[in-house]
Length: 369
Image 1: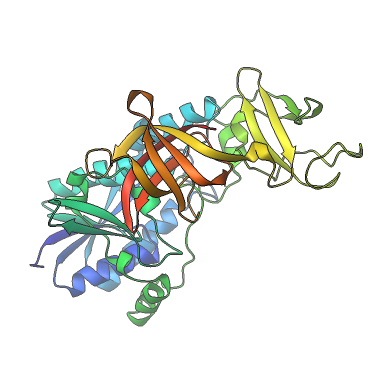
Image 2 (image 1 turned 30 degrees about the horizontal axis):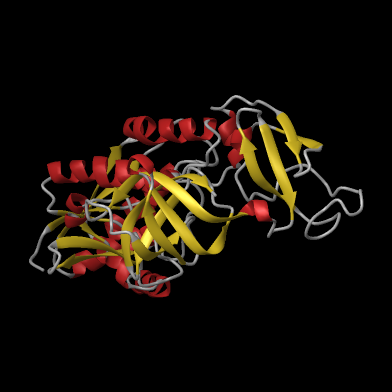
């Protein structure tokens, strides 16, 4: 590859730091950009944006590259957070990291980088981009480290975005990335991976949502319709959730399916109209299993939907690919029929389709059947 001007999104983490190092090593002109996406409570113990910027700046210093601090908080609020709240209020469970990639990292950030004269951008995501000569288009591939693959979060990227994007660490395993960071003396070589939603940090989620969504308590009912507790507002629960329900075992013998009176409870359904949370006992209760899902708001990497047929899909991140058949749904939606029942398929989450190591795109789950 000839020498190019490449703008790297430096987050303060080890993956983006090694990304910048690898590109510099290849002889490219590398510029770092630190994205600030959230500023509602910047001084709180949970928002690590200031610490992350210090880490990113010290990485830039060690690598000998420039770094610019760019504030995308207004874009983030309009394009990601507003949608995130709308989905929660509708009783669904959105995936803000998918939205953040589509709207901020590969739109607002990409546009900004192009204005700086960049030919490409790079991030520390564990994924790969390949140009398929025979098809004449770019493909999004899984990262080579199966435990770290992040193609699920990137499935909404299009041809134009992929043509401008590099994912150098997607070719490596995480252990190798840490080894490189250590070897070149990066100050954040041992920094632990960030978890949780990109803007919330490590804070308790319910406490955070409380500030933006009004509480509407209502009944918690079991599969027989008995009221067994009170929920704090449907937005605060997700399908398959086991912790934080505030209900113990039922004492009535023989009333439970799959595990007796002390079997754990799981959230199985959310009835927004009746403001009722339905729970069941036992991880493999039939209410928690689905063989079909429908998804809308589809986004396909190739720019068009793949042909109906046999593929694999993930209906949540960190899930093994599940064999399925793709078929059309109504109004541009699509339908996936799975060979094996899938657990806690959740409206609002992304259903992402794969053909081997190629990520084809996906959509937002509207219902599970």
